[in-house]
Length: 246
Image (cartoon, rainbow, N blue to C red; front, side, top):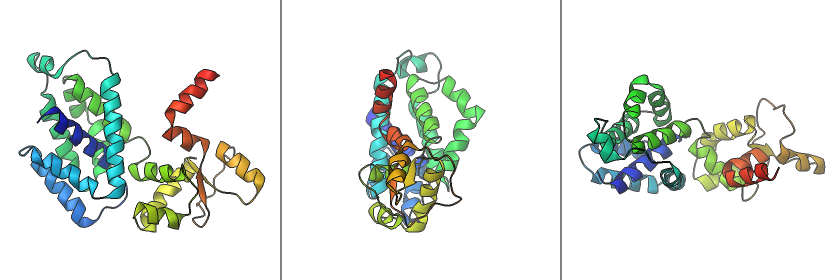
């Protein structure tokens, strides 16, 4: 498998590992089928990528994952190349990445499988003896399953542009309301979003996230907006700049 296919496969795995919404049964089945083929047929990676491209939110999540991987690979300190690692008896990078991908893509639930995988000592042991490429991907995978999931990120991206109700967000995400409501609830409880207040003071203080007490359930009929925490999650550069200015 060449480097381009490896990066495409990694981006697909990262996107699906964060996806906590339901997928159409036929799409999930095709993804699992591609996952079973990647160790035997390199073209299966392109098939997998095309499957994600057919789903609007997954396609966006894939592109985000590609950019994240690109940044990680181009900003890391290099100490051991793939070729050198293999010569020193390390695990073959391509084979291990394919093993990671196959374990996740053939599972019934992608995110929970990824979470279990990154916490297993047996996998970690193999990563420790692998090349920098494997370590970089594994770190990205581990980070991805502890951050807001792909659905939540896409919801925040819409709210970064304007305020929307649950119904409007479901329309733009091309998903049923019941599928995105749990993600909105989590974003609300974790203080990434807030319901737009009817009062001027509420709207001024809402983005600053000063109200620490949350109601048991988010009012899904309200217009929703990003808090400062949500904004800085999407734009970490501005958070870093603001911190340095202080």
